[in-house]
Image (cartoon, rainbow, N blue to C red; front, top):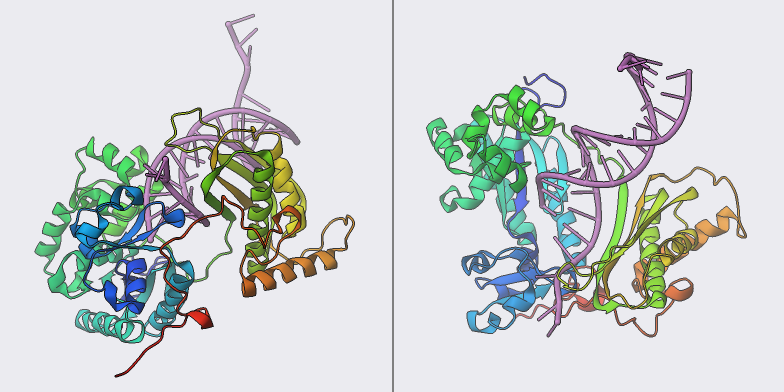
Length: 435
DNA sequence: TCTGGGGTCCTAGGACCC
DNA sequence: TCTGGGGTCCTAGGACCC
C-alpha cells in the first residue's frame, strides 16, 4: 500500500492544515474590533456572504446569503460586514504557506487557505507537531488554523473537519491516536456529503442506495461504486480505508484555463458599453497570462442576464480560435470585442460578463505571422501594460476604448466595505500606537 | 433596487480517419 | 435485409472543490 505510486512513504502521514474562516480571520488579524463579534466577508460587488465567523454562523447566517437580506437587521444583531480584500488575503496566504513549508517533508498548497503537508514520526510525535504548527502560525501571522492528520488525503481532510468541529481537540485531530471505536462512531454520524469529493448531487444518489454516512461509504464495495458512479468516488472509498490513491501535486502544473469574469454594479444595456467591458476584461486576462508566462489559443467571450430576473434570459457566448497562441492584449481585446458583437442585443440588461482563455501553453514559441507590429514590440507592450497596472492599479492604463482612467464606467464593481490593503500598500499600513 | 469568481476532472458522444 | 472495427481528438455537460 505505502509503496504504491503517489502514496506517502512508509511511516509518513498526511496533514491538512487550513485557516479557520480564512477571510474573516484575515480581517480580524488587523482589526481588533472584529474579535468575538459576528463578522461576514462579502463576494465581489458586495453580493453575498462568502465567509463567516463562528459568531455569524451561530446567528444562522449561511454561506451564499445575499447581503441585502442581512443589511437591515445587521446593526441590531451586531453583525459587521467587510467587502472582500483579495490583496490582503493573498498576501497573508503566502506568508502562511511559507511558514507551513518549514515544518513539512513536502508540501502541496491546495487552495488559498489550505495546504497538505507530509509529516513523519510516531503518532504521539505527530500530535505534537500539529500543535507546534498551530502555535507557530498563530504567533507569526495571528491566524487560527486547524490540523487534520491521516494516512490519505481524504482521511486528513476528514480529520481536519473533526478538529474544527470539536473544541476539546484544540485544533488538532490525528486519526491514528484516536480510539478506533470513537472514529467509527464519528464516521457513522457525519453525513457522506461532509466528505471531500462528495457533493449534494452524489449525496442524493448514494442515499438511494442506503449510503448516508461516511461509515456507510467506507464499507461500500469499491467495484460497485466504480460501476454505478465513477472512478473518483471509488478512490474516495479506497482512501477512507487507508489506501492512498489521490496523487500528490507538489509541482503545481501550469493552469489550463483562465477566466476573468465580473458582475456589474449596474446592468450594461448597450452594445457600446459591452464592447468596453470586453476590451477591459480581455486586457485583464491578458495581463494575468503575461504574468504567468503563458499564451492562449482559444478565447471565449460571454455575457448573461440575471438568473433572478423574471424577464427573458439571455446568455450570449462565442468561442474563437486565435490564429496563433498569444498573450497580446491587442489581439485578445480585439477578439473578445468582435466575438460578442453579433450576439449582444441592444437594450437587454446584462448583469455579468466574462472572458475565458483556454488552450494555454508556455510562452516562448515564435508567432507564426506578424500583422502591423512586430512580435517583439507586441511583447513589450503587454509587459508595459502589466508593469503599469501592477504599480498603479488596473484602471491606470488601457488600450483604446478601455483607456478610461478619468471616468470610471458606471458598471464597474463596487466594494463599499473594504478594509485597507494593510500589507501591500505603503499608504495603508496599519498604525500602532503605544501609550 | 440589491444574489461571486475561479478552477479541476471525468464521461459520453460526435467527427474524422484508416 | 444486409450495412466493421478501431483509434484519436474535441466538445459539452456534469460534478466537484475552495
